[in-house]
Image: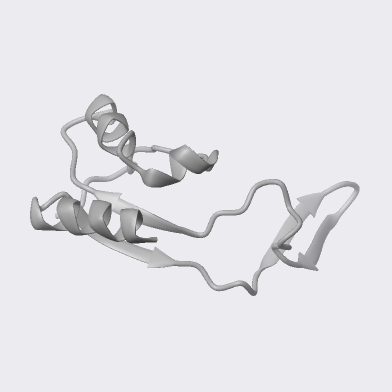
Length: 90
């Protein structure tokens, strides 16, 4: 966790981090078969779990991916997904 803290503090000090938040454990999962099925979830045993997000300032997707390469979780086989916003923040 110390490595995550150092990484986040460095990005914050450089004005890269615009916002961040963890996600609550409770939630709902919707799937469609013949009808839409709503179940409680997500579950810890799921293969993909999103724990939260970090909103950063980057000029483009390539720069954002370069910034994400510094995530310590990659050393522990965590996946980091980098996606642009559809609309820029004002």
